[in-house]
Image (cartoon, rainbow, N blue to C red; front, side, top):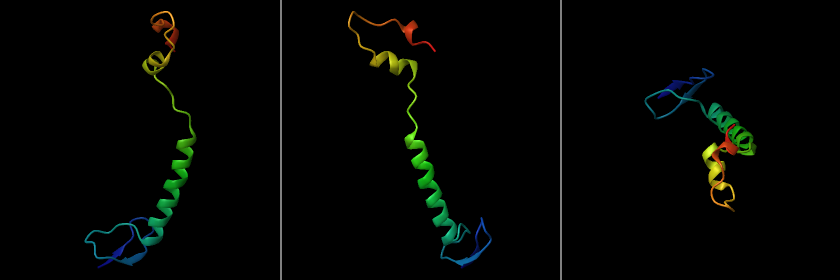
Length: 70
């Protein structure tokens, strides 16, 4: 079937019933996804108060939860 790309309106042929992205738009989306993955992987993970509490060294019993309140 001949479809029209939902992004750039280029015509392409596919066996699928519904229109979707053409080959070039699919490739551009993959490149963009890889770039975004690189950006978000580089960000440091923000720890919750509970995670910080659980990772705290417990030398003399449990640390005070007040120390971790933001």
